[in-house]
Image (cartoon, rainbow, N blue to C red; front, side):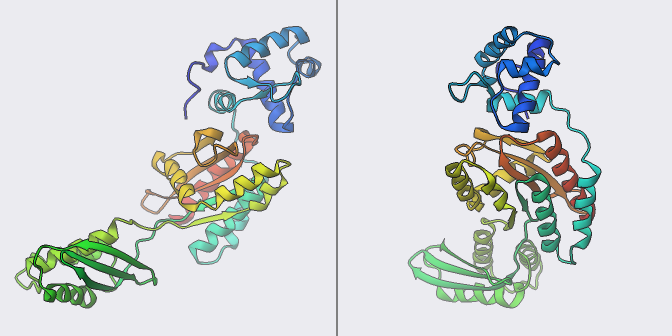
Length: 347
């Protein structure tokens, strides 16, 4: 995470920091614009409304505040929220109540990983009052069957069936003049010798066979098998997304934005790509509004943290999706704790 370009917390005066913090705190609590009179009546600043207005004007010129309507009140911009979250927010440990709720739901989960992730995501959604999402560990399918069908000169259709019932159809290029019996031999070898193996295991078995004198395939056939396996591997392992708590989004008064956000949550491929950014960072990430292409129009925030498997490698991501007016100080440690709890359960 990084502070907005052109302005850092250290560049703000102590007075500006105090006013900016009070505006953000009030906005996150109420969702309403904050005016200078309101701030002066709060008493903590010991400043007149006129002095506060001058500072608010400076903060607006810096791009940290905006006036949403014709009212004198101001709200933090997405740039202002980023500055606050990265440079001013003091995130505490999750509350005992939040910890107890997450722990209890995790312990109620059955033996399956999906049940654990589903329950954990549901309780996180309820506590944060947001939609919650978890990307499950990527699973590598096992081969069941390969069919190779010649389409014409230099082309064949590879139909790969996974042990989970998934089917992948891909057109593959063939060497010029490749005889039909090579296609049949490659297909039979995969079905007889590699069925039931994962992609990595199948490729390893093939290399081992070719390295011995007992190889059952000639080089041309082995190359064709390798090409077929490579076509399947290009799709990579398939992650599964579990989304819970979309109903919390319906609480918003902005129906158009709510409808758009619900549509965005259905774009599982784009959502998985966003969560991959948290996976790659291997640390909690906060995405605010237009920082993500997926949620740019709805002005939503995403807080996501990776969780790890027994070997310490990142295997999935858990997080929440809600309005930019989130209680970041409470939700951030909540998401972080949930990710750590999943990691401990995976160990």
